[in-house]
Length: 513
Picture (cartoon, rainbow, N blue to C red):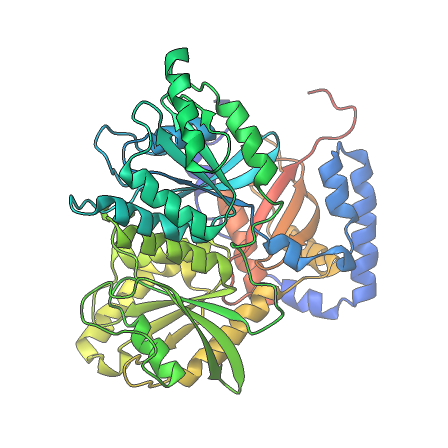
């Protein structure tokens, strides 16, 4: 590390501005035409800097060029299914080109993550690993098929992995029968073909009825390129099953939270009927149930999702797939309502589920359940917990309610509206650059090694959620970027939506590297 560079920890510290500023007041006095004129001047100045094709395409986008539906489409989904111990995890790692999935000799080892971003020949797709089978010596093949069905329902194509050294077993046949009903594109992978002798055994898998089996050695990589070429031929450009429903219909709400927190009770109260089974046993709900609900004079589409247990790798069977479906529901939603029980201490589970919602990029509302039963002593500790454990989502609207009685349920609508309005919001380029110009003038980035990185130009790359790109002359410290995000919220609202700010560090043309 250069002697002029501060320790990494220093750079990550929160930036604390010195003194007050009049950024908001100055913006109010600036008319839109003047702001746009300034932005055009800054944009012209970028001609002196080395820009790539992607930069130029981003900068040349006009308001009417943005396609929110395009941005919310999901990569196609490929599910890997097969009975325990056929090498699915090894194949996952081979496709990803890195060790992500846990591989053990024990059949049915469940993994932390169930979906992975993958690519082949410049095509992106999502890989869904189905490792969470439930061991039951009696009828295990039926259980594997039942649970794999959930992953298949959410996939655009399927890799059916069979152990070529063993051939098709009763479990494989059960999975095959399920796949025939689904009528999804299926590619048969004859795994563990480590030599030419076993390759002949793989040919018997033609009998499964899904066309040519691809002989592969997931362990050594043999045959995986041909298999992936075949995958790309059947995968669509965008997923038909993941991502938002683009029907122009009601706004879609995912109701999430840890098991037994009251999600089903709340949905029933909102719907005015016993639509969802409610039981004191944690994790009763298995399948997301879509419910069209009249609330605040409008129709909303609610999804009651299966409760997420403490850690996915501790789950087996149905609970593993409940987590998979919860992730899917988030991807299909526009806003997540995270339900938290105030009569219990905020747990690691709650924070982890919140993080899942934030990472999904959806709008966010926090609903505190059983508030009507809150005692004064517990209220004191709860406020402290919220301050400590939920500080990173202080921007999310909070609603205090009772799922059981419906108390304060009407307060959900203003919170949902505020979060979705922020999620949809665009800031005009002129206003955005005027804001940053005033902010940086009042609170410049700290000197680093005698140099001060400058923000040359800013643009909003997309909304839903709002994503901003800053063209800079140097790297902005994480603490300073968080400061910018905080001030963006204070100035333009953005209540209830995550915000992403990324940088593109560019050098002047002809400058020696």
